[in-house]
Every structure is written in structure tokens, then in C-alpha cells.
Length: 222
Image (cartoon, rainbow, N blue to C red; front, side):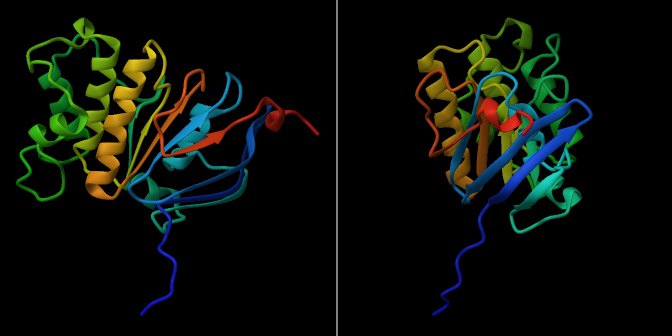
């Protein structure tokens, strides 16, 4: 019988990102196994969004090591990670219908939501995973904030990613609505042995399996 430990879904050690203006984040360790939901929580200025982009292979850290699903190259990580929403990077178009938003994301990720290519989830599957019940013809701008968040998550799941990431989960949501989104993230992670990661301000109790706290002191010059 093999005694080898399973490869973590995400394994980051001493991650740091520095720009000309100073440290965005640093001294960050993250370990999450497939099937788990992880919360990155911290106040504004602690680098939550940029850390999320780093874990998705979209930003290169200045220090530390990162392995995602056994891969270290940013291109390999990007191919296996899907961003549901990150401000100014990826999100929903308000004037689109729900159907159009899902179809556009499927084209962007080069998957067929009918499932005929064997790569992605079907539309009915991502709706079930996220609990999304809004009609296809409904416009994004008319949806509630929690419905928009679940739609963004459903769209990201179409490609059946190994890691799905959502920024600012808590913005505009009540504590009950936040737990609804966390439930969807955990369901998606457990359904396909994926890792689900979301950032929050940490103002209310988390619905995640694991929590990584980011502190302002970590980005101060020493």
C-alpha cells in the first residue's frame, strides 16, 4: 500500500507580491485539498484580490512557492483555474440575459455547455450545483446581488475547473446570503474534487472549510 501523501489542490508557501509602491501581500501560506472551500479574509489593503489572482495563475508572486493541482507554471495553473468574478478583471455584463452570460462564458472557456465534448458541465448541472433558479431570459441587471454572484459562479463552473475563485463574496450580501454562496462553493468543490476559493472582509462567520487571514502588518515595510 502506498504511503505517499495526496497532492494538495493548492500549496503556497511564504507567498509575497511586491510592486514599486511596496508589498501588496506577503508571508502567506495556503494549503487546501481537493474538495475543500477556502476563505481568504482581510480588510482593505491586505492584498486579497491580488492573492486570488496569484492562486489563479494570473499574477506572478515576488517571493515564495506555489503549486496548484501539482503544477508550478503559471500557464498550467491558468488552464485549470476559473475566475468567477474579480473587480476590473472578469465579471458579468449588466445588459446581458442569463442565457447570454452563460453562453459567452462557455465560448470564452471553449467548452460546450451541452456537455457533448466531455469537458465541461451542462447548463442544468451548473444550475443545480449553485442553486441558480433565475430564468434564462432575465437580465443580469435585474437580478439581486446574490443571484448575480451565483450566476457568475455557475458561468465559471461550465469549464469544470480544478480551482474556482470568487472575489469579494460578501460585498452586498447579508449573512444568510453569504452562507448560500458558501454552500454553492462547497457543493461545487465536493462534486468534482475541486478547490473553491473566495475572498471576503471577514466581517461575518465563514461558511468555508478553511480560513486564511490576511493582516495589514504583513504588508508593512520592515
